[in-house]
Picture: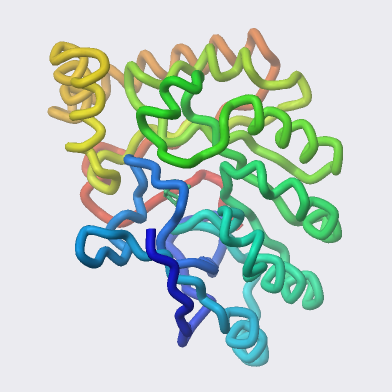
Length: 282
Ligand code: SF4
């Protein structure tokens, strides 16, 4: 992956995601390289090589923007991982967090990175901040299939426990939940008892790289499994049938583990517009 310092014109982007009114993405592209990534279309590719853009002026641009924009809440990491490996060198996210803290602007972080651990003391400074931590696959074997450089399960569980220890509001995010591949029950069994809120977000096949996901499924689980996963999205009836089964599993898990589970599953037709409703409006 080529690393390139870039200058950005704008840091606060209005977002359709219901978690915040503005999103901030300190990087363009992402080292973690998840195959199903919804943000793939935003990536820079040149000569088949992906470029990671480091928005080196992000903090100073944000500082100016905050003179005339007052976000109610900011979403950090809607189209990149804020705590990827290069962050440890460039500290763009850290500067942004410090700035938001200094203005008392709350933020919600979407991450699957163990590297967030060293930022927890500064994130904990504003009690309204919240972390959505992703664990959508239940084995390291699956993680290797669908993600390139993300942390292993053990590291993620360790950081989930540390977030709880810092008393930062936390919701585990099982998303994207890939039908017949992600196992709700197995993921829950990996989580510490302190987890009280879980999102289950069904894979948004029109946004992620569905063909490549299906190819990986076929390579590892065979053609029947590929067809089975594909069939979920083939018709409204199939989709509703799958939804019923998933809802049933969610309600069983809810009573068994005494946790709140939130299903994020658009209406069949909503797959074809840009709406992403996380069911947690600001
Ligand atoms: S960590 Fe998030 S932004 Fe990065 S590749 Fe994976 S899904 Fe995409």
